[in-house]
Amino acid sequence: MIRSVLVVCNGNICRSPMAEGLLREALPGLSAQSAGLGALVGKPPDPIAVGLLAERGVNISTHRAQQLTRFLAVQADLILVMNNDQKGDVQCLYPQVSGKVFRLGEESNVDIPDPYRKPRQVFEQAFQLIQQGIGAWVRRIQALG
Image 1 (cartoon, helix red, strand yellow):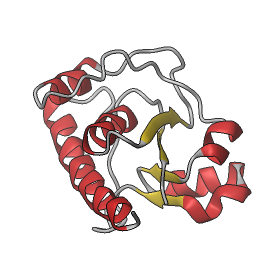
Image 2: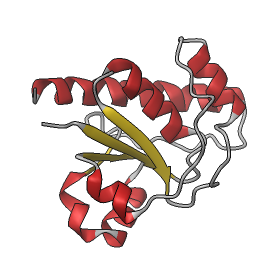
Image 3: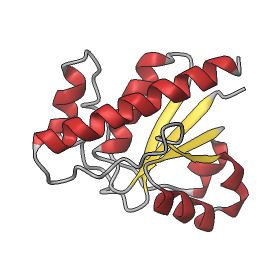
């Protein structure tokens, strides 16, 4: 049974906070967190990310970026990353969590490109991929009971 999910990206201000917000919305009983491999620690989410989620009734404005730590990785039942490089990085840093690290876009075999410092259109494309990935993982998590 999956009770806690950790979503990981680079800075923890664009992709992973959006995914965390969508996960919390879809599965309110689940513990969802996010972190970055090179987190901009203490920074709020990108305003475009905040806006995209707010338009869908999801508030991520209180999120603050945090660095991925051994504790966060070990305590999570499932770790979702944005691409294969990040998957390898997490597995290299914390080999004991290797079996629970997957790409967010695993089901459709897609990586989610980083929209950081790019126009809203790039954020929208990343958001759509995140939304698809979260939908697929929510179905899997629910199927596991």
